[in-house]
Length: 266
Image (cartoon, rainbow, N blue to C red; front, top):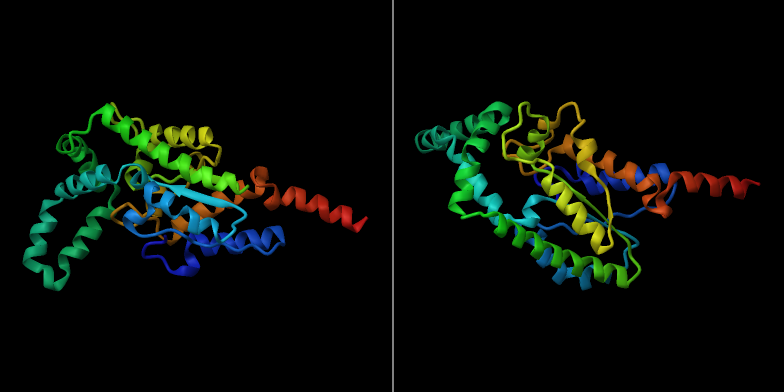
């Protein structure tokens, strides 16, 4: 949705400007994202008739781990913030002066502190949630069912769906960690989402492969790590615009558009 990012700096506005400029076509981008649980697949599935009433030419679906398992993310967030209990204590003492807020932002901005708290408490979060492999598989199956409904609505109307997975800050930091924590596969969700999307008939853009090459990957997120900042929106826009113009969507392909222009000139 663009949490805490100005509208001109958001993915929707940047993508509109980029595609319109490079394809020399009138491109409109409608941002249908919603805050919180409004972005979960079951809610999206229920909203699809209204979305399709807008008669879109393409649906671009940016998926996060929150969409797949919001309760797990809530548990991880609670546990990770527990690793900085001192900042909460300061909050009770100095809260009215906002010192705790500033200190928390400073501590979370440190990659080492942020990841230390995240990794230290991630297993505790899983324990509190009684998070087994079978339960994770069950949530993925539910996500796959909702995705099939969403993509089915679009395909029935002849509307292509392009999907991508956007990792949160901790998930993204795991790509570049060395050594990587044992027992954690940072690419699992990306691979699972790709499998679900492709089997449901969507076109998949692997944003993770390019995103992890960003020179300041950790700095693309806000201090709590679940939302891209303005710079992050700019990087994601470049990745998605490149894919959309690279032939995945014929109507937006700059290569085919250039050929058509040359044919008209002849």
